[in-house]
Image (cartoon, rainbow, N blue to C red; front, side, top):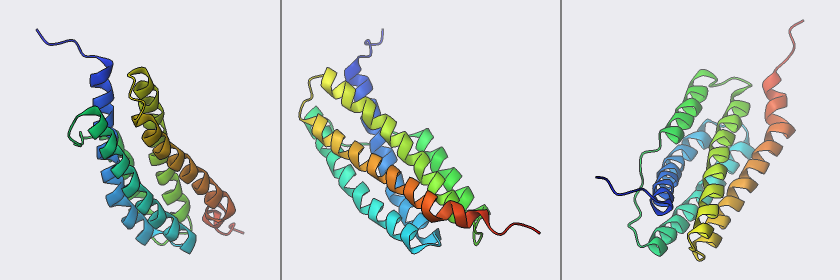
Amino acid sequence: MMAEKTLDDLFLDTLKDIFFAEKQILKALPKMARAAQSEEGKAGFLQHRDETQGQIERLEQVFELFGKAARGKTCEAIQGIIAEGEEIMEEYKGSVALDAGLISSAQAVEHYEIARYGTLIAWAKQLGLKDAVPLLQANLAEEEATDKKLTELAEASANIKGKGKKAA
């Protein structure tokens, strides 16, 4: 008979999931930066790449606090979100709507990460992993700030440019 799964197991599985996701995102961000047409978009994706590296380092500390090796577990959700982003880069390459599409893809990633970090924080508190909470909260705060910056960039320029000129 299998041992009963506990919140400890679920926390570790979810930690592995977000660790894998962050590593995939780290690989995708330079591609998104190269594809972006606006300088603000390029700079934003590169800045988030640097933040993501820090988030991975914090996750490694959480694994250490939990007494486990930092290892990812394939995250189908993030792979799907990244694949959608690559599709947008391909289909909208050179179009006025490309940056709006890149921003929407990046926000899908951010919202996934925000959901994961919120859950991990709640479970870390429940499990008494008080030293893990601030590390996870730092990652969550960065993801929320990035989401806000993406919304501002979309509203200030990308969505407007993406509309293009009206047909007469």
